[in-house]
Length: 334
Image 1 (cartoon, one colour):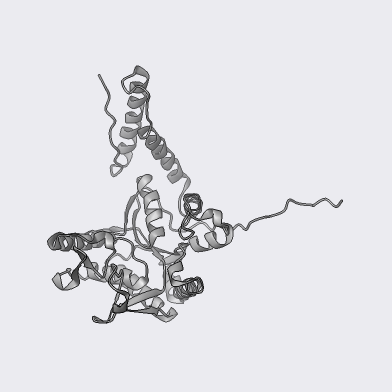
Image 2 (tube, helix red, strand yellow):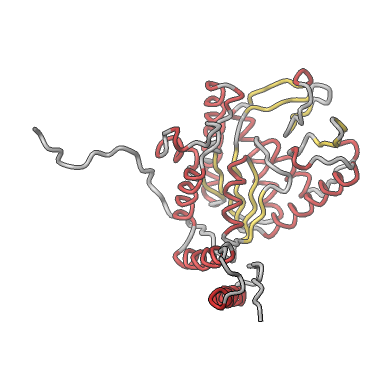
């Protein structure tokens, strides 16, 4: 029997280049995009980075992201002409349904507040992460506008279209140029979401992802963009497709990445963008988070009270170094 000279390799490892634009606890991160942007946003929130994710809710395609950024930076406001009433709630075609509200005035206030939040954060952000989910879009026939979300309006009122590679690339140019005018120092990180849009069809989903990837690389490879070092591509989609190419890495719906897959992609992201010092602070934050989630058998016991004091000491020490980091202070019984 012939022995193998080296162990069999059963999966691929994508090389991990270190970014020249690291993220640390002084960074301000702004993120837009698909459900996967939300997954990454939750990680930033857990580890107490200065980050804002999707003020308008999940946005799946580049034109939707471009429109809200344009509105925010040109100081436009949402008005009654931008909203409509359906199924006992007010909606806006330009944002996700999580923004919808039974009260018209509340919706308008929330929309315009989100514009202010977006402008404030984009003008001071060190990094802007944009995650594209699909190249399929829906054009509202009556208004002739491409929408961000259909809000369960009957499908016959829309025309489904596949954005061309050129349309996507032009939208990316608009996004970057608008943001760079108000914040010349911002660095862009572009990703393609690994979420499978199977409602479009299996073949159609791959066609959509191909358009997004081709447009992104055409845009990022432009000589003018590379010379200015304005941004880069993070390979979230490729990790899912090549390193984690197994259905066990999907959630039960077989559409979204599982929590394990999200954790693995996050780990890869940290290896690209985080420094040793950042990892050390993250470790401190995680220790505090674990302490906050601890469920004691006897909350008033002397042992637990000592534990709480230690957690509070850690919180105060970390907050002295980073004032933006906030935790719930644990009550201590006297």
